[in-house]
Length: 172
Length: 172
DNA sequence: AATCTTCTTGACCGATTGGTCAGCTTGTGT
DNA sequence: ACACAAGCTGACCAATCGGTCAAGAAGATT
Image (cartoon, rainbow over all chains, first blue to last red; front, side, top):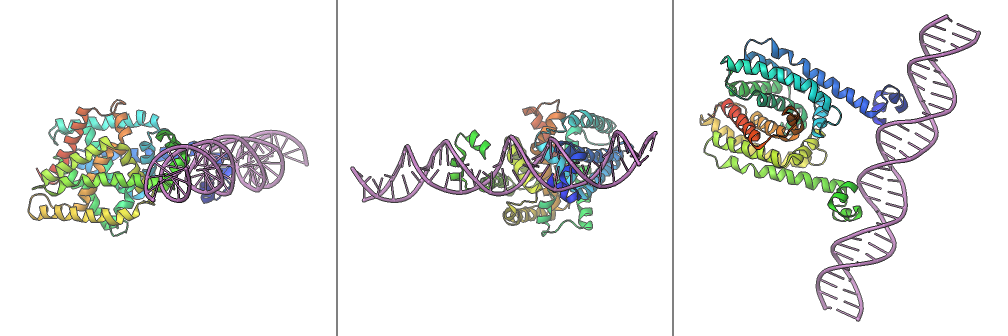
């Protein structure tokens, strides 16, 4: 809290005036990240076919990994520790959201627009792969001659992820 | 350190006799996880084709996620914080290992055994997807009616990952 | 101008952290 | 039997943590 107050440029006691406890502040941070992720799902719904919908979703999630890498890390850390603070989000909003997308994917499968994979595990793969570029960004950079991905390299990453997954589910 | 000593059943001072600092103990933990991962790579080398090699690698990594979920989380946490303790591993062993597998994958591509994707990003996808079941195991369990994956569900997860990726890279 | 609420602050607190140290016990080699 | 090293332990320490509190400063309302 002292460090956060210093960076924010106010006394620690004043920070505690706005956020009574550290957990309260932390919860707000996690909450905002979660909402950013939910917004990225808009690309999912209005799509006529899986290649368009999932492709746009990958693009959106990759862009979030690039622009909010620390937010992604905070979420990962929270979940890795068993979601002690935002378990209600997992059981509420996230579960509902997931069920909704599973229905969309299942409809595509039933319509013969993609291979009959398990929609749930496809979602896990989408989350894992896109968030990896944020959560493990340091490792990616180390293996990229110690430099963060350039704009062109981000584009290559996006294209590879989209190509492998969309082909993998028989959408292209 | 007090908590670790309690669980280990010895006084904290005695723990410090074997590990002078907390970082020294921590480093050993991360080191052992890393070696487990390296061992899983054996399945990669002797394979005649990508479907066999990468399929076996996915199986091995998924099995590690199931049996050593906390180890995976420790590694993830370390990398997420910028690898302050094991950066030398990233720049040494991991970089060498990665370069070696990239060469193997590139050889498969050159031989026309799989699609011309970027081997580096394929490796990232393999790591991300398999480790997701450990690092985000709590989230996966929450979305699985609050229960950890059963043996049968782990098999379904493995099959889905293998099917999507192997098809995605044109190996099957 | 007077009153009341909101905001701001430095000083302080108990709890916990990783780590130290002198002295004890146990094991080993002669 | 002796000496020496290795292993073990309780008590202690400085540093840091999240959080509190009384008192003052700034704004708003009448």
